[in-house]
Image (cartoon, rainbow, N blue to C red; front, side, top):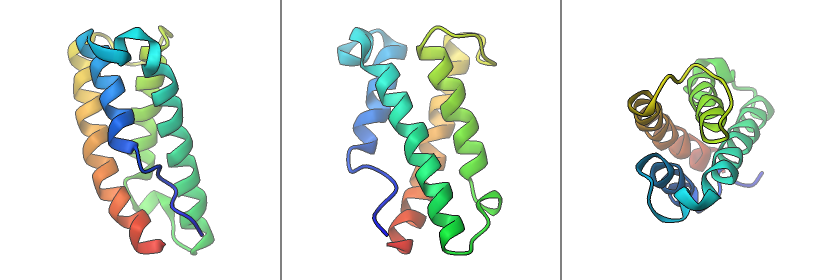
Length: 110
């Protein structure tokens, strides 16, 4: 089974970071597609874990999906649980941490 995460995962996170800081291509509209790609990657990882008879709830997948979905809402201007820029930055930092751990797991599963 192929990798769930794209090779440009850090690039996608950077687009969201740029959006939050009002700079770069993230500020020019790349953040929504980046957030969507991250959510889709996490969905693929969830399926991959199940394929390998692993329980996704025993990993950081649920927390990462929550953070990614909330950030996706935020960068699309939709109502969610993120109530401001500082909170959005906290969500992004948490998501980066979760994704670092999950990318390692994705690599181990092949």
